[in-house]
Length: 509
Image 1: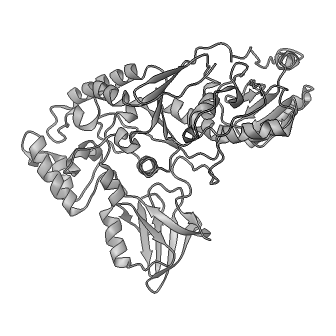
Image 2 (image 1 turned 120 degrees about the vertical axis):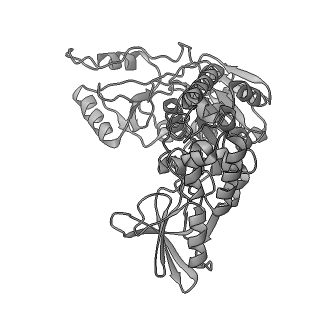
Image 3 (image 1 turned 90 degrees about the horizontal axis):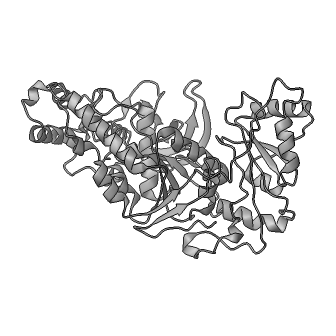
């Protein structure tokens, strides 16, 4: 079985996969140097694949773009942490920092602030830089940051003499900036509860606090466009009066287009033309379902003069337009209905004198090696004890690469894999036709290495345990190293960031 990479406007079907083998197939065969955008049916699937990708390709920057977690036209605003995560994801996509993007179809249909807004309102602070605190305070307020006495959440800042505490959007931790006169002497992360500094960094990135501008010019644009686009007396609309007074209350995000003179942009505009899409399931059916829901919610919102809704096409791509934009890209269409990678029933039988008999029988008949995956270190230790009580010994390994490098028949690691699988039919990279250097697939493997994998659930409480096995044909280190370099694409050395942009402050040198 081959897994070809489609050209623009072409589609490639990847057959005979399963839910369990899909993440490894994507991580192994998708090109390294191009941005990959994986369209999922929902948020759960996107997050599951993102965590699996980080297990198989830990040196990649795997980004998840969340939605607002509100219903269309709902009079609620997204949580500030979600806004932070979204802005960080968009910045990484547009700046080329992202290797792969996981996004639900509904989120991909939502229109976004114009690219120049995010680029023009993102700036850096570096040690040794001259800083005018008064100007910084004005810039932060204009960017939507809240001036508070103590910083506890993203989008807040505090100033105490020559010390500035700042929690940038898209960051997991706040930073404390110490000034010597008007020069940044140091930047350190700190704990919001203890107020103690943790570690120094050399620079930090500041994203805007909202997906729309909040300065006086933006308020002026909002008032003008509101009068143009919304029927009725604007003074009857609570949202119009609130924004005019500099207040951006709950639900104001559903008036996003009115804050800009230019039209909103889409995820396709951020991604660019060279990306490769992976479409999971019937993405067009999901797009039609979501578009129908949006129109239904719009109909329900009509008639409210205090919060008059904007037309759906102002805020979302219609299903037809979404399909038209998507067809310009190469698309991988995985088929996960295959049975070849499906495991037998390996469930623990608590009523039996041999509760792990199914696993023992599988280990006896299976010619490869088995990797059990626990969701935490604590669960791993519990599983190790349970296995030992029942006559099985598993070697702990740190990660997927550690599994490939070891030779024991039964191993265990900590990994967030949701489904079990075996990979008897998946080729190793040596069995794939070599790709060009531009595709980033690395060098061909000369020896004919076979792969298999399997996952089991030895404890009933381990809802996300899994396991993988590689055939015993992998017997020498020389045959393993080319596989590692191809699996992980080791051209990047930085650690994989967290969903909300870990490492936005760069370490001091």
